[in-house]
Length: 261
Image (cartoon, helix red, strand yellow):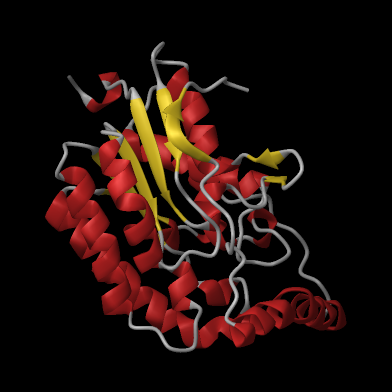
């Protein structure tokens, strides 16, 4: 069977807030996100398709591995996605090698049961947040290690660092850490294209129409607003030892049917 003919019946998503679906929806009506969008697409090709999303916001890579891998393996997926590491990389003290090793353990566990696994190389955060320039080398290091681990285990990689559109602010929420609805749609399309799903193509990587750059004073005001609305609260949680995922559990812990939207 060729990649274009492949039909997946059991999809499990592992990760943090990006895979949970923040900010594609809200806490009242629920979050959709790129993984849900991908599952909806897969469900149209397989009558008995089932989907589980084990992701929980705020989780570090070792927490994703410790809290989600065994459950994912137990669900016996034929497709799994792993997106983790950004919550580690934005912390002041981080060892990219150790974070990538946690991700590789998930690759090994999932490919070991015969699942097709897809992961993501992260975009350069400095292209979204100028103050994040010191993180660029760290993310580059992490991505290289993830690509190498993926090659060792036969894991497919969606390389968001290779396409300028992936750091277009119009694909990101105001916190610049989470994709918005358009960004989640693009990432879902990117994974579908990487899997070679019928009807998928590379249109997800096409840049958006050019827009006029803001004047310096407006750019400065935007940076101040971001610092007050996101950076300050984030630092406050770190000082108090809290996480946005405290008390939260996976939104779809078991394999269940999907109703396409």
